[in-house]
Amino acid sequence: FGFKIASVPFHMWTPDVYEGAPTSITAFMSVGVKAAAFAAFVRVFLYSLWDLQPDWNYVLWILAVLTMTLGNIVAIAQNNIKRMLAYSSIAHAGYIMVGMVASNELGTSSILFYMLAYAFMNLGAFGVIILYGRKGEENLDINDYSGMGFKYPALALLMSVFMFSLAGIPPTAGFVGKFYIFSAAIKSGYIWLAIIGVMNSLISVYYYLRITVMMYMKEPVKEFVGLKWSPSMAIALIIAVIGTLLIGIFPSPYLDLARQSIQLFM
Image (cartoon, rainbow, N blue to C red):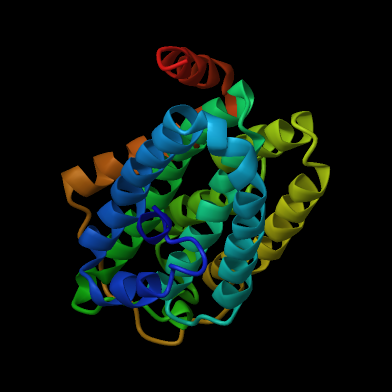
């Protein structure tokens, strides 16, 4: 399970695979594979092996801290946006593991809620990367996004919303997801784990907002050419940004749905 969710120390494959795979495949892996792995992990750890949960909880506590901390710190040094999002994905696995450590109803529900939020914001970010790469180049260097806000304001605005959500800035889905997960940890008595999670979230703000700074406050490093907005890509990005904002502004129905899903297995 550690390998599938890309937790430390089983994370080494993630950056190379994310960078080397086609961006559309990377987008699917970052959400689909992680969601399926966590679904199986939660079912086995919190339900099938409930009697062993107290013995393993502090191991998960340590792994959660290592995973989110390493993911965020190494992401700061990345200049390739897909590698940055790969280490970001590792960090988000650490956040989700906090919900597993909490091992209460709110913690388990918040895992489902967070995966839903993560699907919208992460797929949206990769969608922007795919669309921006339709000029004949992939434009994977972070510097390639310099000046995008002036040439492609709509695309830059979408990317900014997704970056804000990944960083956990209100009123986006990412903020509410982290709030629920850290609240579950505090409710179970893991106050220091929640504090470490909040500190890691603050660290992540730097490399996420670096993209926004590049788009709006830096001069272009290369000449822009016209983008071709396909109807399918436009619809996908609109759905992603609406989902990101809707879940952040009106989170209660989605958390209630997650709770109802969890109760089926309790």
